[in-house]
Image (cartoon, rainbow, N blue to C red; front, top):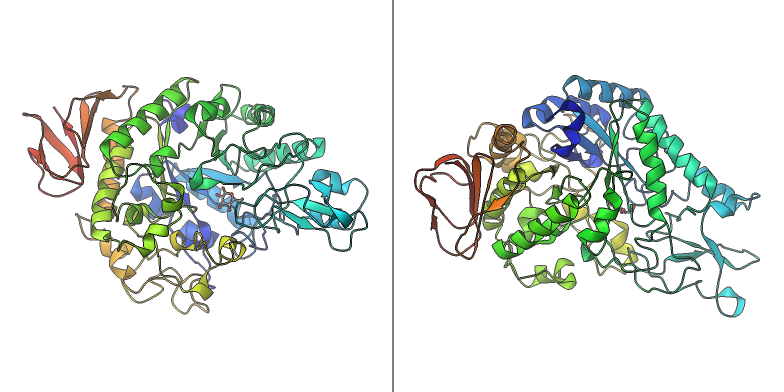
Length: 543
Ligand code: BGC
């Protein structure tokens, strides 16, 4: 694979910067901490990092409420530190992907502040509308925000009874993408960071920028894992023209800069529209993440994802977890129904079934081998390589996700997958913050996480961390090939395919299965595999 095509097979590590490593002891991850851990990332064997928003933000939604797209959040560092980080990452041959948030700004952004002051033309950059009913008492339509509650907030004391739209928190007003200044501003923001050497952008809520004309009623704005994208706010045809403009900005650079879309749309066919040759390069295929641990579902999901991507000549993009969904280990720690319904996804089962984390870890190790054997690009969310579980029992007063408050304290939200990483096998904060730190980590870490720390796993060849390191090294040799997936006939509950010279076998069933005679095991998710593959395990073999 040529260097210019790195993004077609890349393994990208997601850095949730707030929780990665704290360099200055204030309990919040930062650029100093991240830079200091570059050797760790290089040893892991990843090709790129994607950093969640690091721009100045009042943190109403953990940085997805951006106050200034061309600067760095002071608690994370400075622009100079960002420049130095980009250079240091490149020296280690690690590409840097940032997160752009074009659907909304923070309510503290200078544009929204000007809109609140009703400066001439300022409100046109957002979606202000008069309320319905007598005195404009009711919101302009029936949209309910992704985080809960109405998607509209009233402008206090406004003589025209105006409301503004926010698909997420009230502190995240939606931009009006019909406005030419909004379009030119974001193309300028892309160029600002590309000029600094940034290699690409993950596009937040890429399917939400354009709303159906007239903003008709549409009800609850489901998003993320719920995956019901049929709504006048989602996946409108008008978004594609925006991305054609962005692609032409990226194409001005050498090497070409790349985009990855976060677009929760109803099908891979709809997703492929974002990946047409003059639009975006890749898009997360979330069905893989949503699939239960069952061979038949996984195979369907994989086939559908590959076909969708291939229809537009794009690489498939596999993701098992991120900062918005429960961690993989925990998703696999309970029984695995044929399809996870929305309510199950929303954690209602958590109260009914105790999590078996050993089982979840065993399955997560196996699924990692499946993920890395597939063609295309793969994402690793920080802590996935340590086998961390979702922290399900965070105390209510510690929760920070706006979902918790906006849902009227019925949805615990996403904090459980955002808990700061354990680096050292000692007491809390496990080396997340340096010795002598002045503050506790911004979310509390569980009492047993020392044993899952990097230090604890570093010296253990059977650890999760070693499995990831080994898998990423061997992936280059075995699976970085243009060869397609060719499924093998197997028993129910088993998934097996060849690609090039190697085979990947995955057993999600209830009984051990024999491996084909004569194959040699290259890497296994459990120890001692030679000619039989136990349940909840995977293996790479050469035959
Ligand atoms: C991000 C979330 C964020 C939301 C609003 C998402 O899809 O991944 O973390 O809350 O966009 O910006």
